[in-house]
Amino acid sequence: MSLTSLDPRVTRLHLPDGEIPPMEQKPALDQFETYEVFHLKKEGAAYTYVGPVHAPNEEVGFLFAKEQYSRRFPCVGLWIIRTDHIQVTPYAGDGENIYEMIRAEEPGTRSEQAEPYEIFQLKKRGKAHVHAGRVTATSFQEALQEAKQAFGEKGPVVNVWIVKSGHVLQSGEEDRDMWLTVPDKKYREATAYKVMDKITKFKEEQRNTPA
Amino acid sequence: MNEQAIKDLLYKLADDELILGHRNSEWTGFGPILEEDIAFSSMAQDKIGHSLAFYTLLQELGESDPDTVAFTRNARQFHNSQLVELPNGEYDFSLIRHFLYDNAEIIRFEMLSQSNYEPIAKVATKLKGEVKYHVLHANTWIRNLGSSTEEAILRLQSSLNEALPYALGMFEVSTFEQELIDTGIYGGEEAVKAEWLQRVQAVLGKTKLKLPELNGITPKLGGRYGEHTAHLQPLLDEMSEVFNIDPTAEW
Image (cartoon, rainbow over all chains, first blue to last red; front, side, top):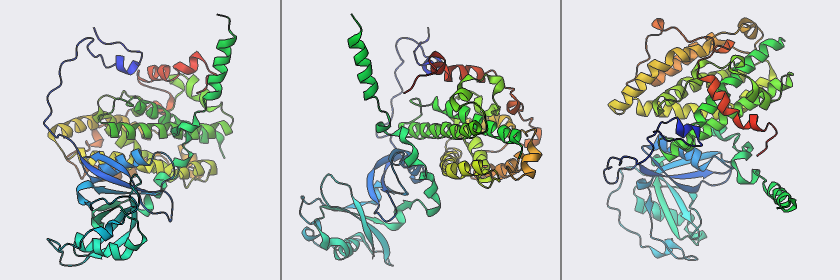
């Protein structure tokens, strides 16, 4: 006997009806690595953190991020960063400024030449990290000090993420038309389905039908 | 401007998109991993959206409304290539079909965005970016999986061999082919096919997959003239099930 379902796709699989044989045990931690995703809502705004994706590599991460984080509402660009490429400062409390609370540390390693780093700041717990700008440095520690100079005075800042610019996979100018039609896709938004009128009408009919 | 020629072109574009959109939507909830399931489903939705855009142009030329055209014709009246109606098979087959189809589709959209027939040019220009993402998705997977494990490479190669005669059937020429080319409405199937071969080869060249020798292959033709495999009618029956129960249903 094979399984029959109201979903014809399930029936077509000819699955055995009854007990399912146990799946082969998977090795521990058999998972994709994670990537962090930032989106640009509109021209002139700043890249803002939207969430992580699991993916086997950066370019597949981009494919997944595009659909998971930009399938609704306007978007003109995406950045993808492998999670372990992001250096994270300790967290301060709301209203505090983390730049004032951490001591400048001596870097363990320095690059021979200064290179660009991207700085993302969290202004308030529960909000999202927002791209503050770019600094040039020879280490993460120096980049943090540079960021303090450049962006730290406009506190409060409760947390900072620091990433080498070369580790950011960025969508290009020529990719913008991939998002051109997203705002038209109202059918992807819950608000497009106005069902209350229909439910009210249905309830009316039920009430007016003698039992 | 020959309306018959334009209608023929629109029907083949729209029917390809509708049937493949429906086929690919059959993966919803069954995708290999959640993220890919979402991506593949979104693209299926895009394709059905493209068919709606082309059916709407047909309606402006006097054909029935898009729902009637999509849900009430039988297999003989469809102009899609046989490639898009084949069952999904396993994911390797669906990915290979996606790769072969979308690399042709983007060329059609690029061409049509330059069409002398302005309504088509407008639609193609607007929707081109969506197809661009579909191609990026397909090419990224083929590049990654096509040079990964032995199982992945074997599966993809076998699906490629199986799909190729049908993929060549996408380029079956229309009765109005020369007229469409001469009037600057459409660049024609031979031009699409030549460019397609280059693009497909460029991606496969970065993998361990090999495009079979084309000389030995007979393309599966007939789809553009209503000849289909046994798989199309059951698909249409399933797709139009709700419509046939209640043509006025809304949701």
